[in-house]
Image 1 (tube, helix red, strand yellow):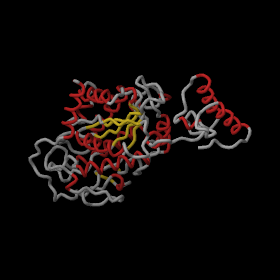
Image 2 (cartoon, rainbow, N blue to C red):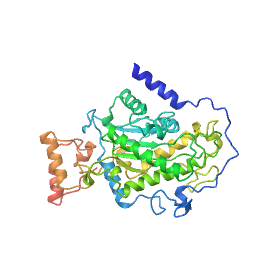
Image 3 (cartoon, rainbow, N blue to C red):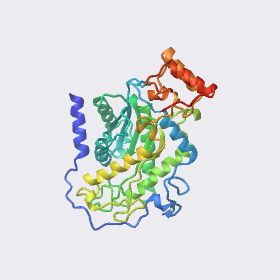
Image 4 (cartoon, helix red, strand yellow):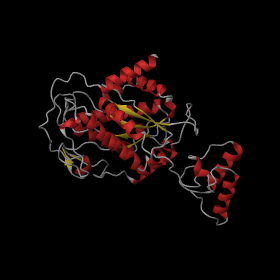
Length: 388
């Protein structure tokens, strides 16, 4: 009962905008900044645009390949963190009030989507007032509250495998790039804390702030919202460039972080349409011009859902029934190793294929000896390909 009360109080704080006395600056419809996704090799105060190095918006090939492999390795886990066909894949949100408000709309938007993986459980871990500077402390109460929310949802920290991280700091005053570097350092601490608390957390997608040109308070106005995008860009670049403190690959030494990548990029210059037509109108914000209104939350939720359904690292676990027929061990190839995997499952109580139909090579509706025989014929006798 106490845990449930804590969650309800946390949600109330996250979802309520308290005592904003100033109206949004609705005349501030543009700040003249170019979205990072369109700045490309152009320069903002001496720094190149693009989401990734070189002014591009696509992940480097090797980093993308690692992320895709991570995505395919995600499968349901039980409360002890062991693979279990009856377990769950848990995705959490990490961040402050805006993140909480947006994820609270994302969950009911995503859950009824017919393409969503039914094994996926979404838990809103973001909380009001929990800025980057606060939660970059491993002892912050924020993290205990996330664990309480996981418990109320019927899962454990060991089942968390994906996260959406969106953060900012309250009332920033430092100039650029000092404040952006500060957030980058705090984000680095946050991803390390998250990996330590959720050891099976494989992927963290990061998003920067939405437009803040309508802000009527000093909570997090422009240009800080725009410039926070550089914090994420630089953080991910550090991981790609091999920073030991952000290592996600056991083959390269001790693991301190999950695999990091941009999630949806949310910033657009007010009423100036991005190339994808995204704009931010004043009615997309609460009266402080900083927190999103219901329409603003929906815009972010839509962008997040579209991203997860289309990104190569998200598709394998976010969408249902993503598999290659005969690929029992989920390494995206059909080889002798799949035959061994199936044999171990059928005769030795080994791990089940995920999803189960990946091992149903003859489409009989079950996985049994017939599938082993079918796969032997395909691999060694020129038989028909596994069916799907």
